[in-house]
Length: 444
Image 1 (tube, rainbow, N blue to C red):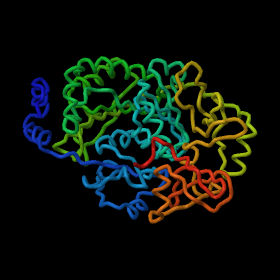
Image 2: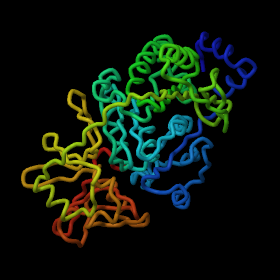
Image 3: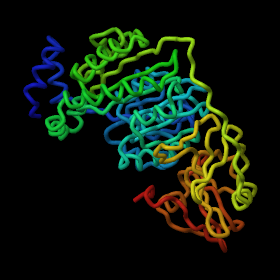
Image 4: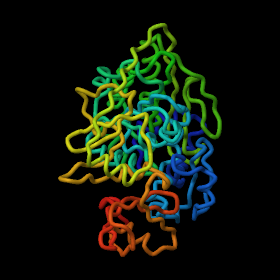
């Protein structure tokens, strides 16, 4: 590939004697694709027993695996069931370093298309709160879809600037991930078209935006909280330089020591790591870990949301079809759309909200229509009326293609499952299952 001269010169200055190996990896190396097991739905060892392809562990991610180039995992029914997410291997490192725990309140600031949000959700195991934010509205569709497919209940999706988030979330989060918009040098091998984008929006352009994002987001973190900053670029301007300036201007933050391991090498500062394509089987990435120093000043706790009224049509549907509680949530309506929203989520007044919480469905004339997000976050035992298919059942592909088929069952809503795992809804009428699998998800 034809690399920009200024890029080549900077990489030579950073890498020294390693530069020829780097250049060879960029020009001749192969990108290895990865997937990450969704442990909200299945354990890693259980997935390995089911997986139809040979898998090789990604060293820095407990749930991550390389899969063969010949495999087509997005065509497999297990993908439709949300058992795994396709993710570039190096992109799994920032959340592993953030290390969110059950009970944490976590902000994924630049979250679309959602791979890191899903990884955070699996780490906190449904116990805690995630705010997934992205500034660009056209990226929210993929984020919403991926959150639904993964079966995540405790995510709020916003479409805001980091500055506007300060109105509601100052001092609120235990952990923050900033996977900052960058010049994308680490993706040149995967998609050489990125070189044109680099020339249009060079590192100095991106650096200015990154400085602002980091400065504004820092106020959203609790004292004692952890912030991970990451990019998929190599140069120092967008990485070490941004962080050095930030730490110089914010004495209440300090770097956390990161040790080189598993192919991840030390950056220029003790709190940084780099993933180089000639050192790891993955694309280029940079990760830094900071801590906000403890102080006696803490944010005022958010007042608990009051339990909303339960519309009669929704109550009837839930009683007839669902056997599950939602003690940590309160019901809220946005127009005719119903959501279960985490009780510890502050008021979102004045913010651009894409999804306040777990989308349940829509109230229509004389009926409630359940959502895909509802069933994807339920277990088989929580759905009273269900059709359980296996990989050998011809009706599985029929369902995933959005087609109807005969079903000798009681009339009404039926959850369709692949073994233990939800796929979507169907509605039975006169021994025919009308297919409610989303059109945009259907197998072609």
